[in-house]
Length: 162
Image 1 (tube, rainbow, N blue to C red):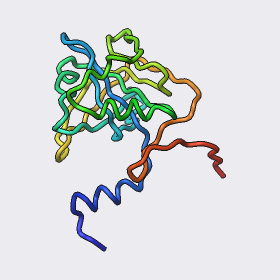
Image 2: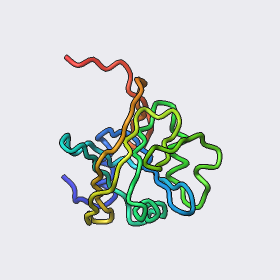
Image 3: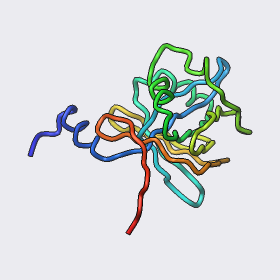
Image 4: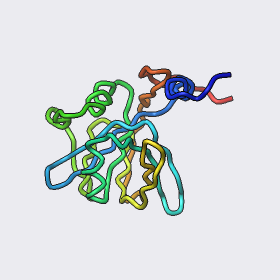
């Protein structure tokens, strides 16, 4: 048994595989976005999602001000997209193909699924903010998801549930 230092916590929590998303939004300066692993469905009625964003994010303040966002669930093979949106100080949309949802949020081409939302709550969560959002539109295609496990990207293939 060990103490929950930041390093040990990251190592142990990293054993839980997660999907990979890119949260996008737009303000008067154009589109913005960041990579996010802390995403889950929250409620069916009304349809809501929840995600967490680090206080250090430079994209989040722009998205937060707009009051709406799009959760883009990445597909197998989109590791470069995840890495691009994890960086700061670069034009993340420079070479991307994307479209605007009816709510005005960037939907990235080729993603597994997307949820365009209005932000309904922001709550403190340690070194993150926990965001709840009500889903206004959504869509999905039938392809394999990108996952993150123990510090590496991977894919989910051939799952059989007994």
